[in-house]
Image (cartoon, rainbow, N blue to C red):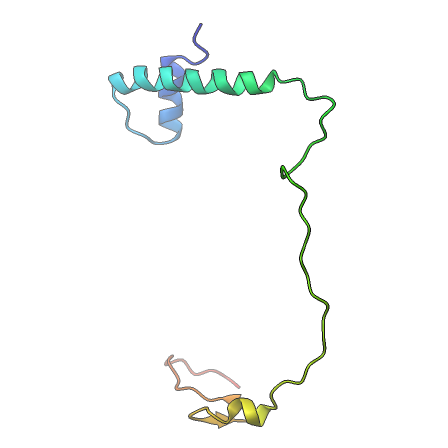
Length: 101
């Protein structure tokens, strides 16, 4: 017995806003029926003693310890900049809007 009818496929096509021909309705009904049967088989698996998992193997985060290190001073960071102002990179304005600062 088919798990999905032509009418249900037509309804799904309308909901999805898909244009489906009469021939495609028959083809899709058969294909969706096979998919639904496969999903039903998976649902029949007895797995009461198997804990739910998100991955098949355990995951371990590989993280390093935070280490305080020296960093660039603002002057060093801006030393190669074509233009700087108030310890910031200065770039050309790209918007014509007046921005209150």
